[in-house]
Length: 130
Image (cartoon, rainbow, N blue to C red; front, side, top):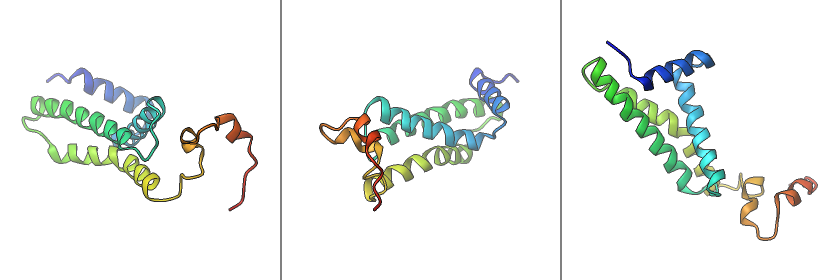
């Protein structure tokens, strides 16, 4: 039985990093979340970066489903659900904290929302104690 190119790439990444697949799901989720937020200039409280992570996670699990059916004869849907939750957890936590707490309120992540304030201005400001 031959494994797919996708599985070969995933196994190569696991071997190269020395991490298990669960850890890689977490890193991929965070990388997609922050990449989409930065490139599309979306605040962390926006649902769009989180939705991008969901799309990537589901797409990956659909590829895994195809490989499961080819190799073991059925879809291991519980493993796929586990992977999607692993991938989505921290992006969801960050989005909810950004939406419903003041944790990110005075941080550099919100600079783009302030008119007339550049990143340079924020970096050069002295640190204020609250």
